[in-house]
Length: 344
Image: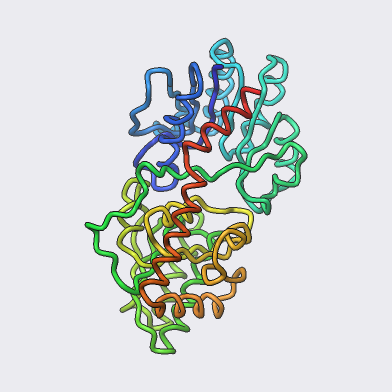
């Protein structure tokens, strides 16, 4: 089967979407040929049966030009794909669904997010199936929904004893915008500080242009709470650089609400970090020591203090169980499951 993939970026150096190059590489093992249309393209190395086309963001194209390029590609390439896989962007089924229906192309959408609107419903109406990883995702309500593994590249994400894991070190790695709720961790760190619990915390991630003020408010919050000696902010990093960050920190914290089920949870787990998250899906898979109620900074602080105080053998038991859960969420498993769903 020949597949058309639509995604935001094909660029290994993109701090948010860099992982998707490996997804395409894995999907290529299960399809005769793949055409990829992305908003922007950068650095990548993909198999010979994959071609990448950009809508032109990296060249400064306007939104009108994006739309013109989009319709040009999906029409010009119509004989080079049998089905369509849309990654996250509901705009593509809305724009192209009617044409794909006329052309007899099945449409599949991957959308894993707690929020949604009538536009999401319209996008789903054009789809044969909708894939998500969380039962709390907005799209999970649809009869077309099918739950999937999160797709962790376990060939690259694994522990490395050569890298020193700093005791009582905490990592937050995410885009710096409100839906990721980094302020919950900052408030929890302030509670630990007041209780005299020692730690270091690193926040890796960059804001969107629309969240620059929010990001600045996070840094101001750290100063106000007198945490500047314990807390450091860093720019977002490519997915490949995240591996050693996971390996070097003892704890990884994710404050995203249920319905998002961030892939970073299992990337960190695969690298041997203790993962603490507010996701309801995650709570169903792990020891209660590793989860906390949504937006509850007091509970998060309690979990972090408890984990840092555990004896080494108990920490080892928890990390081993987390690595086992990460293995179940592998990219290889996801690639096979998606191919089966699309081919059927």
